[in-house]
Length: 439
Ligand SMILES: *Cc1c(COP(=O)(O)O)cnc(C)c1O
Image (cartoon, rainbow, N blue to C red):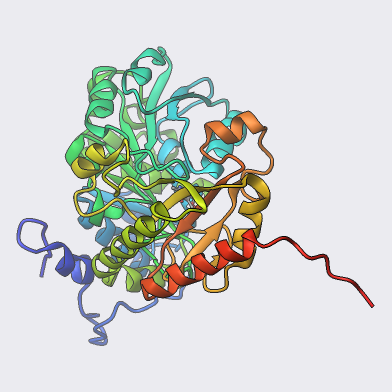
């Protein structure tokens, strides 16, 4: 049975898309195919697999049946054509760019990204000869102004962390398409339940499945999804997709595979040669997480709104940056792009700056002090003293991680408990510190 987007609702597809009872055993849940390799029927069949003439599994670095169910599920939920899963969100970003880039190539990225992405793009990608130009994403025209001849893509994050910006996807997609290049959207914070980038013109979506898709803080994973709508042959910017590939007997990915040629390239060249494949066990854990994605996201959003409203009215808090609050400058964009809610990761400022920020996170009991988001558990972080510690004051301000900023990832606990724990932490932080005396 094929679980198509036209016929079935999001919740049904979250549970069923890509999966079917195991034909060999009848197992109803997707088995964990914990095997490195797959037996060939014959030498001829092996040859056709290697030549990409038949689809099938050879070796789990390139594809695996458990991982394949996950890939099909995420592609379905995003409304995309095909997907390639990887070992982490960062691996997915590398895999997303790899089919498009070559030494000397450039791309434009929003300057408001997950901190690790800024480092990956500006330092490590640089060593491949790829140059990133960062722009302020709040004004879409900034992307047009930064276009260069060698530019191969525009990359943005929807619902950026930690600044909480909602970007105008439709306008940015238009600018990318006028330049003949794809728009890549990191939809980790939105998830396909809250935000559907392809409906606004995005061409490629990436996720850190580590976060809300897995949803339980238990498995790292990433995925690249292709919409199938971008015409790679419209110009000569993407020779990796439109010119014969020497390592596959002169096969041309765009011509041979059409609307999923980019994904076949990301797998058959990217995963094959760079190797960041997703472990079957992690694919299973993430699949299990996705089964409850819609109900988890609804509760994440409801809890986040309650916590944000509490903070907004608290005397220890100077501001709250949550696009779900009507006073947010991004509220109108959030209603357009995230109609079911503005996620559950946001920041607020405490009066008293750096020291108070540190005391608040250290005084929480229920909220876990750690650097992650998208867990069932509620998480709290003071970026200035942790994730953004290496940056200069100026860079921290620009990233939305000033001294007074605290970041929350609101989990699925009873919201009153979360609010009480924060309230107690504010009281504890307001008390003068008493130095411990050792005996
Ligand atoms: C965590 C995260 C990443 C990186 O994902 P990893 O799985 O940690 O490699 C990328 N983008 C966003 C928005 C993230 O939150």
